[in-house]
Image (tube, rainbow, N blue to C red; front, side, top):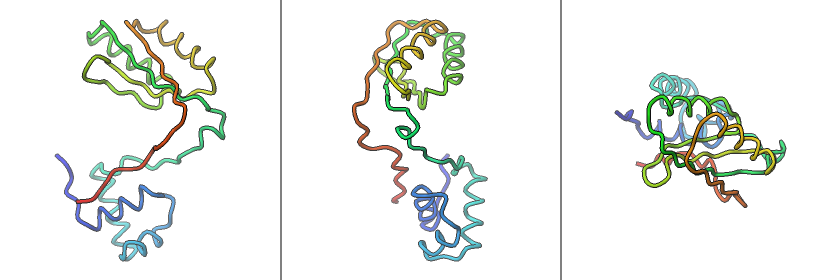
Length: 155
């Protein structure tokens, strides 16, 4: 069941999504509230699970990760044992930034970030050695057009 948010909660969350490293004073001023109530609301939102964690967004290219692949996986295996093995394989690979189970012709899509095509091939070879898949299609992203926009909190 979704958590009920009022207008102030939504403003706080919007500001945190933009830049969670800003000071509490700055966020409070921006939304027109005082520091202590804003801090109490943030604690409440964390306790309710609305704020899952606070992280830092890194520049992948500056760190040498220049190749982003979207990997489409089809499998003929749908048993719980295979799914558990597949999930374990994904969790053990830091190259996999996102993984989604899909409805339709494709069973899974992965977002894989690596330095280059050779590194992707190393990832691919390790994955198929660990888990049997029916078909794998890798799509190289030529350019990221939009990313990490945050959730729309308009009522």
